[in-house]
Amino acid sequence: MPKGSGVLQRQAEERQNVFGAAQQPRTGIDGGATTRAGAKPWCPASKVPGFGESSGSHAMCGTCRVVLLAVAVIASCAALAGLVTTRLERMAAAVGVVGSALAAHGLAVTGPAAAAVLLVCTVAMMAVVLGAVAVIEVDARPRRRLQTWKLALLLPVVGVVAMVVLGGESLEGASLAASGRATAIAALTLGVAAVAVPLLVRRTQGGAPPEGGS
Amino acid sequence: MTSTVLGLCLVGVALAVLVLRRSLLASAVGVAQACLALAYVAAVQGRLDLAIAIGVAGVGIVIGLAGAAVAVHRRRGTDHVDELRELQG
Image (cartoon, rainbow over the protein chains, first blue to last red):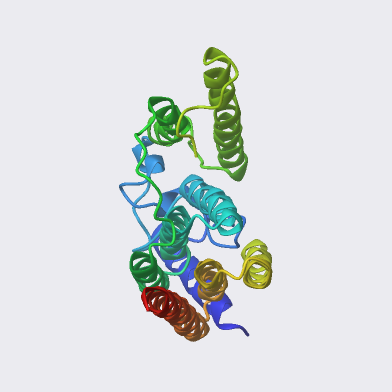
């Protein structure tokens, strides 16, 4: 029997000890238990009235897990773009986001040990790469002013956070379908904003590309 | 499964960048992300020892690639200084 199944079985036994044998744990997309009652108090699902007691020290609701995986995938795409265009600072930052999201997800699925390993690896790798970038100054380009319209790209992120935090009431049950819908809406908003904002800015500037754009 | 495929794809992209653009640092970051994805998969499956091994191997590879990039940069700088001295006689 693989080692991972033993961990999951132990978590299921702990839930049964707390809630009795009548409540069966639901499994998420990664095979981990996604019972709403297993979330920590900081999880949005814990705001639902009648929320059960925490059965594990590192449990998290399915919505948070899906959001974390979505963050990891989006940041992976950003890192891939940075890899192809060799913009190393942005790429290193994106990889840092990927590592952090995976560490948080690993914390929810397996425990603090996995999160610690992922975080230590992320910090070690990024420290080495950023040190080398600082020595070589590969991307030493002229400083550019921060463009105000680029801040609009942060709006979808704000929307995702608001949807997760404020939408805790409607996420009762934390089903995978609700998590998927939330992630799909967030991704769609992100894509529309990323495409529409530069187009609008270029149109208002008479077709010329934004000054100092990346 | 998805993370495994993603990690392997990133390894391939890192190797392609290494061959095509000859950017050691870009390859180092690509390998770092691939190792993170693989370590995550190992950790989720409960193989913490395997995750640690993958992480340590990734850190070693990244240190090697970054060190090589710095060495190449300094060698180019030394060559450039030698050329300037030759021009000055």
